[in-house]
Amino acid sequence: MNKDIEKILVTEEELAEITKKLGEQITRDYAEKKLLIVGVLKGSIYFLTDLSRHIDLPCQIDFIQASSYGSSTVSSGVIKITKDIAEDLTGFDVLLVEDILDTGKTLKHIHDMLIKRNPESIAVITLLDKPSRREADIHADYVGVDVPNAFVVGYGLDYDQFYRNLPYIGILKEEVYKK
Ligand code: IMP
Ligand code: MG
Image (cartoon, rainbow, N blue to C red; front, side, top):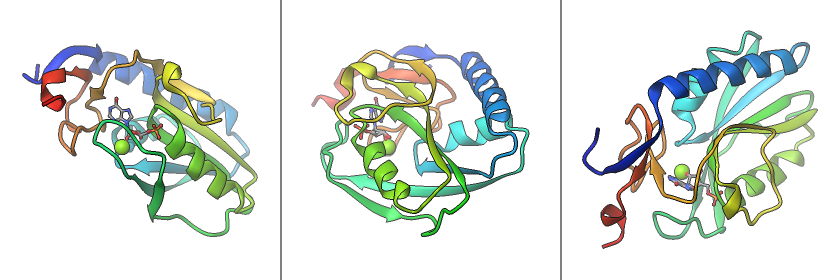
């Protein structure tokens, strides 16, 4: 285990089970639909690539990136889109893929922006949910697993752009970010 990790919260084996189960559920729910999978960069990439391999349907994949000003562990809610997707989403059933729903401010901003582009539907899937932290009026239609209010990294999630490549989700030791 990485020396900066306090405890592993979700193991590689559990991640494989979660992505398979969710992919199969999406496959059932989106049959006959025009699925556009939109990953929120960068944290969702590991989840999206594993999840999408279990989605047995024709689909398109794109990415959107938002930056939120603030410290490295809390998002400020002031959000700027730094990479966008198509302006016209007419006919598409959009599935927004997030690594973690924390306050929900980032996803709420993206959701409200995309809803104006006339999609057929928009749903949200998040690997991790911290429901106790929610401030924005947004919920996930699909959740991998609820996590406690701790700062977690790995499998795409970062602290200061590091730790994304850990194959599991772990709680970061406080001493790493509280200096
Ligand atoms: P929100 O706008 O507060 O919901 O923040 C969402 C974004 O903050 C996520 O997409 C993550 O990039 C980041 N974030 C929130 N909590 C954590 C965490 O525990 N570890 C790593 N990144 C996090
Ligand atoms: Mg992030």
